[in-house]
Amino acid sequence: MRWLLAGLFCIGFVCHSHAQDIKVNAKLDKSSILLGDQTVLRLSAEVPAKAPVSFPLLGDTLSAKVQIISVGKTDTVIDKNHPEVRQLSRAYTITSFDAGVQMVPSLVFQSGGKAYATEALPLEVKEVKVDTTKGYYDIKQPLTVTYTFMDWLRDEWPVLVAGIVALFVLLALWYYFRKIRKTKPAVAKPEVIVPAHVLALEQLTALRNKKLWQAGELKTYYSELTDILRSYLEKRYLINAQEQTSDEILSSLKTADISTEGSTALREILLLADLVKFAKA
Image 1 (cartoon, rainbow, N blue to C red):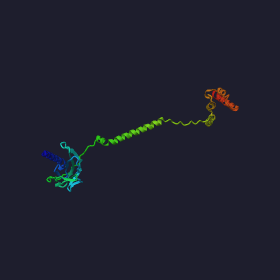
Image 2 (image 1 turned 120 degrees about the vertical axis):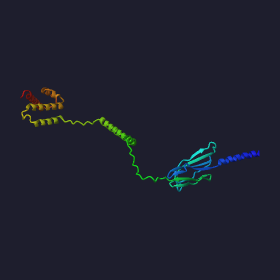
Image 3 (image 1 turned 180 degrees about the horizontal axis):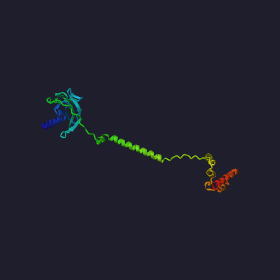
Image 4 (image 1 turned 30 degrees about the vertical axis):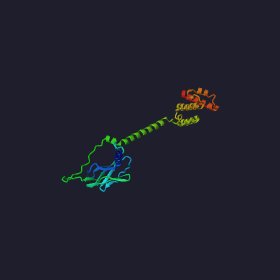
């Protein structure tokens, strides 16, 4: 029974020790590159699932002659067969511009206050061979590239779309303001009403200045004179003087506010005008 218990204790101790082991590793995708070429350095650590671990603190270089170009993200993988173990990895893209064998130094991981170092790796950097047997030749001229309308449209479509939108906006504004201007009621200018007597006096003055009767055009003179009088009477006393005879006009004015002298003068003018126009007096 003691031996059985001792065996089980040993087996448990071995398994626990295996679970607590930390392994670190460094590997190059290519151990030989051309001058200025690139390769990937992969750092990995196998640690217990709950154990903290930190990758080596690196700047822009691994050494004086090996530069770091970029650093990838840290990937974590859980071992299905051993869920108490996880594997962390990170990729570094590196290069070198010095020919020869350059060393990737040993890199140190930290976990639980302890340091775990990887092995140093050699990186062979080869020079680019130049064939000196060939003669010198000119640099090739730039290639002629055709630039079609479709190429221009593909490059400048944002500007084209913005121009079309701006044009539509301007047309819409023009149409809007034009429509408002049409529908806006025009403000009619107030009609200037000239008093009937003022208009009649102006017309009589113009008739006098024509000097028709002096030229012997008596019929024309009296025709225009009676037209002026009829127009005045129609506006002043609101009678249809233009369509009435002289007698009808005088009859319509019997109740009008006209003095006796004025009525007599009007009768004489109308009678004389009728004699001139119809009896050739």
